[in-house]
Image 1 (cartoon, one colour):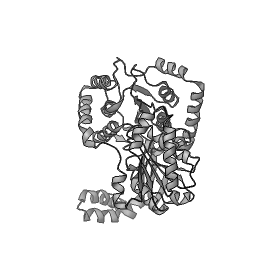
Image 2 (spheres, rainbow, N blue to C red):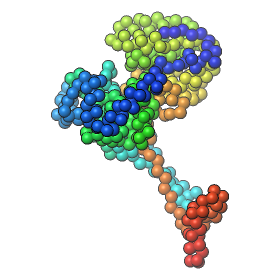
Image 3 (cartoon, one colour):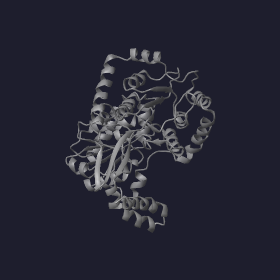
Image 4 (cartoon, rainbow, N blue to C red):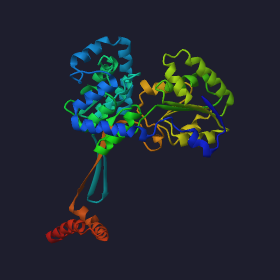
Length: 430
């Protein structure tokens, strides 16, 4: 890891730069695949699944017998762990329900807002080196609580043409309505346009590599919403002498093992802690099964020393981390003043892994600095806020004159007439 001491603010943007490719490097490939999927449907999906995943099959939809087989193969211990996590995620997201908002803005003018579910949801679940069955829980559970009618799940198959059994178990447990063996750009394109086998959806959720991230952004040009631009995983930890070096190192490595393009950063007011964490990282790295991946991510990462908490906070808000861990004596300073972070973890006994799996908060979070303007996935991500209004004769009399004046000032005579006709009808009826 790169050690940096007291960096000047004008160098922060360069120091905090993410190790990602530019969109230009990826966009051409994504657009070409989108065009082909739009034109050829399942044929194009099969072509790219063969090319990228090395598998061919006639039916890309997961059958009931495959799901039953997967359920039978899952160890009881893992089933119980998934069920515990599901329960906590349900509790936290159910608590996010809000009541209908009703207001009489002026006598006779009643306005209200209600939440309605997005009817067709697409979930993208990464497979590859780490099949993220936990992400199924994070997305399908709130989708069900929100009342989404159709929940379509796409996940890349392994070399045998199968989806990881734990993904299938979690999907079945959480009420996913259709599961497809397709990943990458072609999965996002298929859910954007719809194919013979894959339904078109209204909103796509889920993390992925940089190709998937760009594909999701392209999908928005075709009338499909997305949860957020969620790319390679990242973690920033702020810590001082009150932190446990072994814990800090383990948290940094937990994100580094996600992928070679992940980024982890430690910001500290203690040079001693930085040295101890660096030693712990090397020690713990040696026994990690995903050592090769973590090592490459660590090479892109930073250990940054700053003089005080105020400077640290300014730097962290500039970075806008996906995950933010606070291990400091004055944790309230950071809790009360952090403005840009996807999800915050407080204290020595709150590992980021808790949020990834079982504490109840959602782990689908904005990366690449988007925490400055995006929220992580929550119950509202699966709903739309619709407004309603009902106006009585008294109500239109109370606001009609104002509407007429404003419409005329904007040069919109038909808008004015829509009110004037009603006011005249009321007057004539008196």
